[in-house]
Image 1 (cartoon, rainbow, N blue to C red):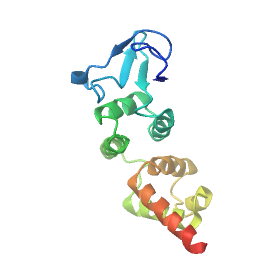
Image 2 (cartoon, helix red, strand yellow; image 1 turned 120 degrees about the vertical axis):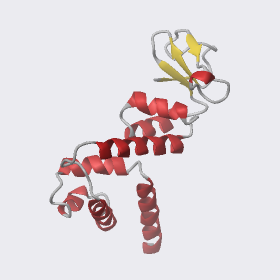
Image 3 (cartoon, rainbow, N blue to C red; image 1 turned 45 degrees about the vertical axis):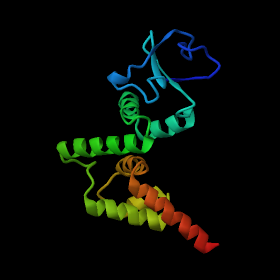
Image 4 (cartoon, rainbow, N blue to C red; image 1 turned 45 degrees about the horizontal axis):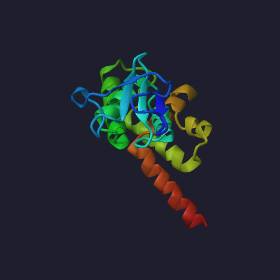
Length: 167
């Protein structure tokens, strides 16, 4: 996936190959299908005036399955919040359908994790001590999933309020 700069001629991707216009009827982008194109060699290029490379990279950190994440962005008409919510819901459904294992988190464990974040901030070693049944790998994986959730946004707001109150 590569950005297409405005300096490139229409119909040309970031790698210089001719690009096909996305078909809006085929789930293409908003704006008459001009936001994302697929090159002849299969690469996707996007109009970086609609979605910056930084926004896209931040989104992909939360959703490492690039193909699925990009499809979700396209399907959500480039609304990153909506795409994120849809991906998180799909992941929750997949996890609930999967087998019960060490990586599953009960609601109580989730609350304990968030209390640990409130108390220790990003010191995940200390947070892990509150969850002896979890491995450090479980805590790290959960942390990165949690960073993409509405709970994280609420936590960040609480952290900002604490900093203002401390000053």
